[in-house]
Length: 201
Image (cartoon, rainbow, N blue to C red; front, side, top):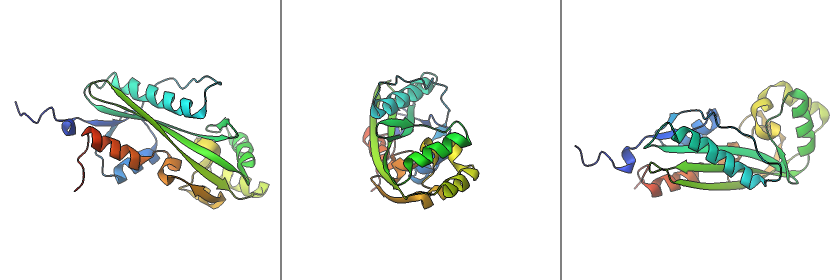
């Protein structure tokens, strides 16, 4: 048997997310991985803070996939937008998207992503990252036109900073990749620390 067979770098890395944005960020970081979408329940307790919510959902997603892929590094993630403590998830429809964007107009909100890495030995490492985004003051017509593009309908907070939604934003502070959906620099550092990916010279 090859003595390097059980080296952590030989273990597969699995992303427990269907998000093309997370896949793009992880690919851009040079990480080799496969995708296995989690079927974990996303029911949460309304008394939870946004931080607890994203961490718990990320942990559930990663744990559900890790249960059927023993010996792998499994990454789960969850992103949400919050304004004054109110969580804004993905809009239910066009009307809901318009409502959310009116709430965000001219104001600063938080984007929080929770990440959980399940190690091959079953241990879990969980963290979260928060960034701030400030919207321009938007007119109703601007909001309706943006919603009509369809872009907001599968995005937390009803916008995509990496898409046409960037035109709605006046400024942001913190990790841009976190706003897109995955704090990839911090995740990469952790994967390197764990020996899941090689450290670049």
